[in-house]
Length: 300
Length: 269
Image (cartoon, rainbow over all chains, first blue to last red; front, side, top):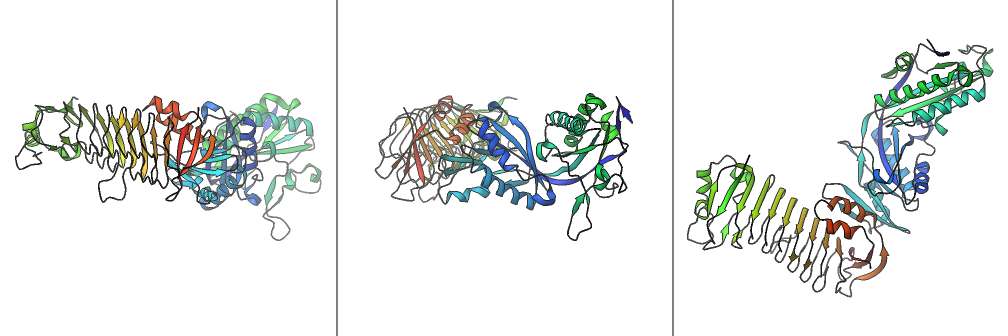
């Protein structure tokens, strides 16, 4: 399928069910809310080696946050509720509690709850104070050296989150491919409930399952490496000089589809001269993941 | 649908126990059966029909037209629905309430909201002693819900309070938040002697400088993030409380003669 000069592969992205949650991190200024959120979502690119995938969903104005301060909405996803709980507690405890002036609130509803402040409160060493509002919301006040760390007791668990939506951008030069990927990321960031967890949202080291070495869960996707084109069974024609991937996680199938749709639209709008000539998607034949995002459905 | 209405015929000759006149206890009864409910607290029998002119209506919304300080236990155990009293009430209004809304357009006697675990009580006048407090022998007072008193409260408001929120808009008597276990109590007027006496945990927020026990230790002046949340939450119930909560507070930790994990927060100038 060719759309405005960009070839869209007749394929699909294969995605998996994950456990996810959202939290709102606030700070005395935008700078410190961002510092806390970036720290918390650092080293959270891939479930393969990080234990979770996380990213900033969107920036929140002071009017949108519970304590009327600038904030960031952060999504964090993992393979099981138990692992998610562990990652959430560790990351909030090490990266948000520690950030000057920070506070932390639930970012999503849900019947099943994950411990947030309930897991952090013991840092108060007995001086922590429980506060419950009339509407039932429960908070912990933990004394710290710059005052108090205010943290909601729990946040919601989303058990039908989706991880692994992806786009493979193939261009004639490194510069135009990166340009297209950046344009796609800018458009995708506007979609709520979805994150692109890799650095700047873009990954250059796409993977295939396994590898020749013992213990490797994943290794380089040689079919998409332009420098191996003559040596392996490549899927790249000679005009392709660079491939970049965008991985998308979301709290719902619709959020991932929405982000992929926004990204594709931005790529097509840019066209083949300034952007990429071809877009594909990674899958495992459709037998592993329950979610399939067909590019032709998203681009039409 | 119109509320189910009890119009007081006149000042009762004896104290009346109105605990039975709440929606869940009246459910399924007709006006005639309700009129036969005994309310007397002495040997002289008085029924609801003797004391009140009864007009049928929606039992989820009960209205008392006219009040008296002899009407005890109004709204006791209220779990859902609304109960409005146009006038004063006696002791223990809203005791052991777990939900719903009780509005008293007048003064309330002692032990209003005693043992409250949920729901809302609004008293447009003043409240007597032991607002939200436990009856003698009980280990805990209020353990949830919200009480707003537009006027003053008597002595020992919030005694042994375990959870929930009390707002007293005018002022309180002696020993407010005495033996407090946890929860949040705001007083927007002057307080009597020794606020927070023997409090273990919990927060007592005061707009005016109190006469504190020396067992409360100054910690400095701070703007608290949680107060901002309370301000937004309480604004529909008490704009004055919301204004107080938006400011900074001098923090006093205590009562050090007991556990010492409580706090008195006094509005900073």
